[in-house]
Length: 185
Image 1 (spheres, rainbow, N blue to C red):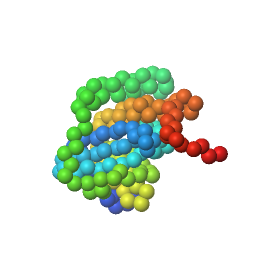
Image 2: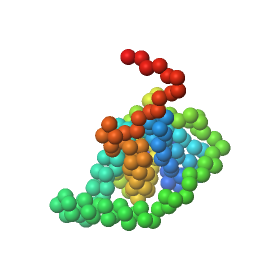
Image 3: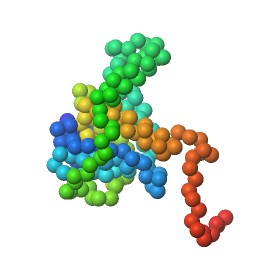
Image 4: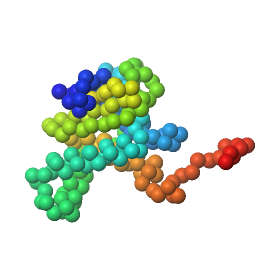
């Protein structure tokens, strides 16, 4: 069931029953988002999401939200978008975004260092199948309710804003020059 999103055998399979917490944060040093997923059996998975992949993932999650509202929302785009946003806000109001991520990890099945995600697939259904393909070809599958995926969407978009990724390049934070650094042209 869960391997559907990855198109093959999943390395790690996490369902709602085994999920502890999900956290997304921005690393300025890496210029990537760090996705941390903890499980109820004290395992933690750490993954790097690139800017390109994050924007594609957000577009996919937005398309799933559209599909879920297809029978309820009118075809007029402005009205459909307003209903989608209202639905998203209602779902998010039931979630806790104020509690800090609490790592109770006693094991790191993929290692303590975050691994790079190079591909992501989403399959809409009663449970959203979220496949994350790693740079070495391995795959992680998360099977989560659509409501929880709306929470993931919020964490991703909030992190995009904190990273300044929506700003034009000339408005983005510039790295500080190292003391006594030589500039090579």
